[in-house]
Amino acid sequence: MNPASMSEAIRTALIEQGDPLPETDEELLYCVNHSLAVCYAQEIREMETILGRKFSSLTIVGGGNKNELLNRLTEQETGLPVVLGPSEGTAEGNLLIQMA
Image (cartoon, rainbow, N blue to C red):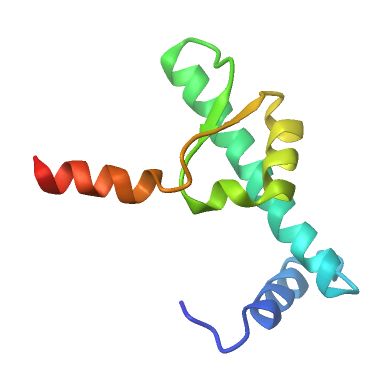
């Protein structure tokens, strides 16, 4: 999906779900980041259940690790310290696969 306005698409989805609407762009940004952090926490708990072990930290690589708000919210929601890997980790991984 590539909506003309992502913020309007998010607001429409919130209305459809019956959730309260953020009043400002800043609140909308917080809402999006918090939603991502909650999803990360759910997936980590599911992986821990499947693997039968607990994680001690979460390493985030790629350009997204520069999002300080998301990193902080992820720590809060997962209860795990966030370790920042290389911001070019995605490109480095791609390069290694290409070389192989």
